[in-house]
Length: 465
Ligand code: URP
Ligand code: ZN
Ligand code: ZN
View 1: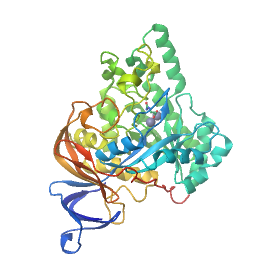
View 2: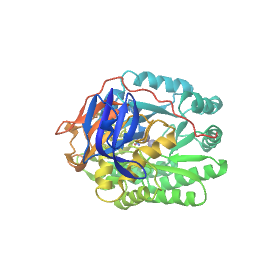
View 3: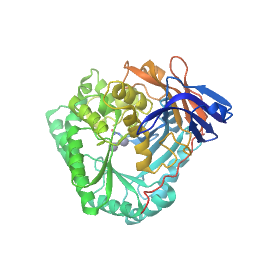
View 4: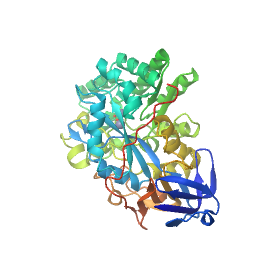
């Protein structure tokens, strides 16, 4: 299949220019003016007044993940369809290692769940939960052979790792070009605050946010940075939520620590008063770390603007409000499964709340949604509209209005945190390796791709390792 996208505005992380884009098979073959005269395409798409963007890459999803007594609602079929409809053409999901399992077996296990269902390309980050010496030794093979050079650790939850494990993973990833990703919250600060609230009998969703104090994030970010200083390695902080956490990152970077930060649309656009919604509805926003006051959101936008935050991930971990968020009764916020849906709304929220409102430029949006993510995670064929890259493309109409409604989205979950929001800018057509996977039908996005067409992408470790 060949496609000619005519008269669009190609946007990169460093600029924009009017051009035609020619796709032949799975790749971008040519970019230039008046390509009509030089190429013959089976499909010609007029893109005047529209942007041609690299497909977004979501580096943080939890599809079909058993967690807190239940399983996240989207599987690889529904989750990746929703991603495609939102202009996301690559997802990097987490596989939580089981006790006694090798990283290889964990990765193969999750591939077995994804393959045949997934509709856009995907990769996996192994999350190290059982750090036996042989598992630490496996970092080399995971980085160089399995195509999974990033390793998630949690400093929170029952499956958190100790400092020694963090040190050993940092040492091994330094040798083999890998990257440690860390969920940065101090477990014992949260634990003690939980005990205090339990004693006081204050157990509504708002106390989840109070227990997951900003101080817990600050301490853990600081510790992670120190471990990087100790090992001379590098680290990536997932789902950064607070301005104080961001300050710690900036301070560490000022002293020469190689530390990267990801934030999520929910921390940029939603705030802690959501936990006060009546009838236990605050449970919809129970996630870790929690939503913060508005000044943190504004500082995170500035972080994106000034390059202190490199990437956006959704932390898509959807649970139905009815039957999951309220599963264990309504008397204890600690029993609410942590996580919220967002895989479908990332690009639209970043454009509407970020670019349209003047908080970030279009180029900064492309950097954080695609180009930086591809570079950090070794997705060498993705992340840019450039000749030779995969034809993962979004023709984006910056003027198209859309009122967010769960009924018009494709995620397999009974709510969206952004219900009723009026957004400006929607994808018109989305391509995954040259195949049309989603399009605007005049009212909403429609999935037009094929189940199982997505492939596992082997990622590359950092060069020179
Ligand atoms: O609340 C969250 N974030 N749930 C998903 C698991 C994690 O911590 O990333
Ligand atoms: Zn996390
Ligand atoms: Zn997560």
